[in-house]
Image (tube, rainbow, N blue to C red; front, side):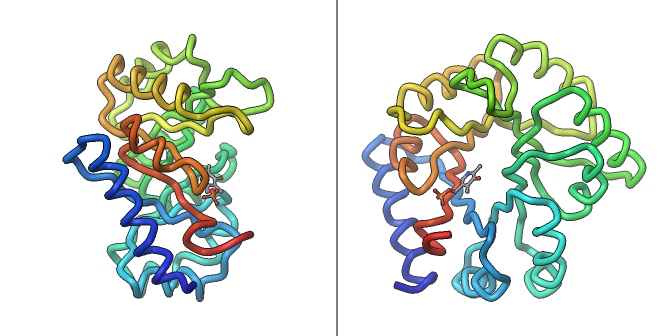
Length: 218
Ligand SMILES: *Cc1c(COP(=O)(O)O)cnc(C)c1O
C-alpha cells in the first residue's frame, strides 16, 4: 500500500474510533515522518496531509525548509526531546513543540521568541508512567510547571503529551492523561501511536501521532 492509501485508512480508523466513543470534536492526525526522506513527506502533502511530526531538530532542518516553501500551510510539530542549544533552530522550524519538559527550556524558548516577536504553541510532555529513563514532567510536578509556563506570554501551552510505558496496556495511562488535562484546563491531548491510537481516541486524544501505519517500517 502507498502513503496516500495508508493515510485514508488511518483517517477512517480515527473517525470510527471517534464515533464509537461518541465524540463529535475533531481529532488531528500528526503524521510522524521521522527517518523518512522528503519524497515520502511530499507524497503525504500531495494527498492533503498538513500536520507532521519530527523528533530531531537537525533532521527537520534538513528536510523541512524546502517542503514548507512548497506547502506554506503545512504545520510541523516537534515530538522528540529539545536541547536548549537547539532552541533557536526549533523556534524557526516548528509550529508546535510537544515536548516542553523543564523550566530551563521554557526560559530559553521565551528568550528566542521575544527576540523574534513570535509566540509558539506548546504541549507539556508528561512522564505518565514515572519512568526514570523517560523525559517529561512528573505527575507530581505538573501543577507547578503549568503555572510556570502560564507566566510567560510567548510560550503558549495548550495541551499535554505522553508516551506511555512500552509493553503495558496503554488505556489506563491515556485515561489518567485525560483527567490531568481537565484538571489543568488544557484543551489538547497528544497521545496514541500506530499501535494504540484508537485507544487514545477513546480516552480523549485530540492529536494522535502516527508514523509506521502511514509511512511503513523504519
Ligand atoms: C516515532 C514516534 C511516534 C510514531 O510512532 P509509530 O509507532 O511509528 O506510529 C509517535 N510519537 C513519538 C514521540 C515518536 O517518537
